[in-house]
Length: 537
Ligand code: HAS
Ligand code: CU
Image (cartoon, rainbow, N blue to C red; front, side):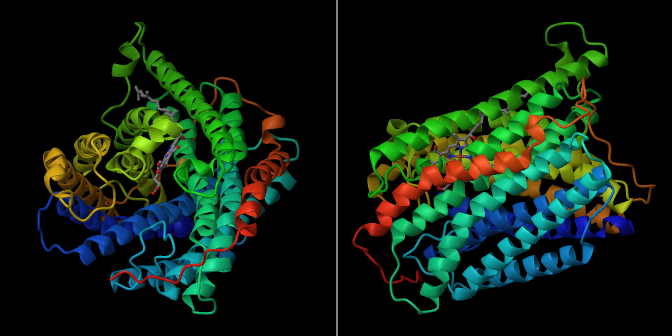
């Protein structure tokens, strides 16, 4: 391993390992819903696998991958990591926490799904393990910020390097989001699971959870956007279309990511319609930076195609490097996001949400957004990172080239069928789609198509794993290529208002208080309907 990058590479390694286990858990669920008993099938196994899949994919794979990316960006664009030893302490803390949480799940003592809604109750080590992972990520954020401040001392007045601007925005969102999570887990779940208090208020806990849960999706998405804005145009042979628009987008996410959480709680009692409406409006506002991203990134790709000689309206598309595994992964991830984002706008509308909430439509939605837009971008990024981190050429490059296409094909079968089945009323999180007797017939074929899609996804995941492991241990040694980032058509050289991240953080914190203080106060002043814990299975 090229010594300098051991820290980043170790994070990516843990992420990929979590992804591997979680992939297997995923295919088990899709088969179970379609009533296919392979290799084994039971209610308890289904919910255990669902929890393991959700936690390992959505929390462990993503967090470790993002931490690894953060270290890559500070080393590559700032030339330093301030606090390397602290960073290693955080790494091992995150590994220990993830292992503790995973073991309590796999041993059947924490079947609470990745949203861990009370009154479902997990083993205390599940919550404590998750807390350790989050604390590790806080320390990671601190190391990145310290590295940036050290760079800033040497470069006063200079524009923040683009990838760092994006990562700093991600970290600010993460701190604002995890404040809600900490209130829930440390203030409520841990004492309750240890038996220090007897009951818990599910509604208050859910409100804290979704304060965290929506910005969580941008904690996943923004590092993918950093790759789309600042690496993709470079790999495609083009330019970043607009430096300033890119910075604006990241700032808008800092402002708008958190005050939207009630769009997950439209059907919850105890939150008034006016607050649900307020969060709906901010949800529609947060579509805007993604629409700007669609514009800017596609424009950057058009520039790439034209620099390669395209002159017609659409022939630039054919000039893009569709055979490059990083490019293909990101381009397909973007195509998936045009559907996933559209679905998000459907979910966000109160009346339509009542049709799709808690149905398989939501499963379809987040497998396009998280499961493809983010996960496929990260897989593609791994192909870009490994030669640079390890000083090895990709092993089995043909597998790497085919794998993203297979992922999109599998996901199309999987996600489209669940969207349709959800519209027909198939609930999400069910062990068997034919649970409700006769009605199951309307869904059965769709769940079989989804199961077939999940098998294709599993094959694609194993191809990815094969390339990563093969490269790590047996990739031909090369001089590690350098990290190069996209050059903007017009570069900002000095600090602009979009670089004033301290100021934007303060505004964002005020927006969080505005969005949550009053509704939480109301919830807390109601007579408290505490619930004892239920330990499933
Ligand atoms: Fe979502 C539920 C609304 C984005 C993840 N979402 C979920 C859940 C997850 C999730 C995990 O309002 C389930 C939670 C649970 O377990 O209960 N979501 C939205 C909205 C957006 C959105 C408005 N979601 C995401 C992202 C996720 C994610 C990103 C993960 C990474 N979501 C909701 C709502 C619910 C919800 C409700 C609750 C539902 C319920 O009832 O439970 C927006 O951020 C989306 C904006 C995106 C766009 C698309 C821009 C398109 C781009 C690509 C263009 C490229 C093209 C082709 C066209 C506006 C940037 C390129 C061409 C080439 C040549 C390459
Ligand atoms: Cu959301």
